Length: 118
Image (cartoon, rainbow, N blue to C red):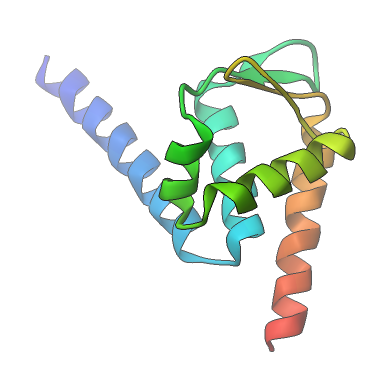
């Protein structure tokens, strides 16, 4: 029991550290996509090789608060990503049609930010 509890605490500590790191670095778009990918990795349901569904139980207001942005900004970026077919929003769930495309978008956003900041 003690060993199982220690493993669970270590897993939760790693998860918390990963979220904290995602929230501490980058502009709001980068923070959003990093958090989204962490949630997909931890809680996403695979539907094929590339498609994932995430029922993360966060409202846009909750997510905006987590990211430190206004809900309107969050809504705007989610709508933009939805138009680009990076994700599909429906009834509190997010579907990622192609996880590799979202990862490539994250990498491009990080590169762009790094190039402009220094």
